[in-house]
Image 1 (cartoon, rainbow, N blue to C red):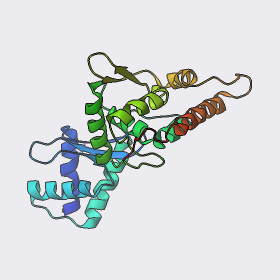
Image 2 (cartoon, helix red, strand yellow; image 1 turned 180 degrees about the vertical axis):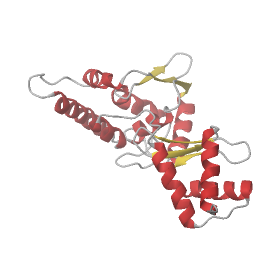
Image 3 (cartoon, helix red, strand yellow; image 1 turned 135 degrees about the vertical axis):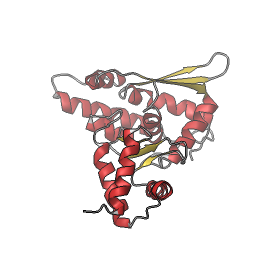
Length: 242
């Protein structure tokens, strides 16, 4: 049976994946992402639902093989990639309460995604603010759920202090160095997920151990930490969010 255009297109994409020029993965929130780093074509790191992904695939297949595809061919390829992304989870947050808390804070969600492929990032406060803001816009995180992104480096400094305990639960440490100009150091550890519970315990005041089972205790402590962060969200001294 002769191969259709969709079969040819899918084979081309899978070949790119085999050579490491294209890959798909699940981010910390379980969202499927498409990443490509190809010398002849634009680089992309976007959710699989992003229209640019379909455009990239269409353009790639036409340029390489002069094959035109129907929408159903693109749908099929995206579904295959969606399934393949399950094989490559990155920095997955396994604690449901922690996942919900992170998703409700734009800055925390941005830093978790930003540090997915990094072990360490260091820059001035202004440099960190600019890079995180640009990253948040690219990933569609600005205005994410309840929060907005800090409106400047001075606001970022206060917000980092607020979300530090929450990010500690995600194995991301924040250090602010004031000597010789304010610098921010973000580091991500590779500790086992089992250590999330101990990080949560150290981030908030512990509840009596005999009152809650392990799951409820973890969820309640994260909720307490989240409420504490939200109480401090109101801008002061002319601060603004964007």
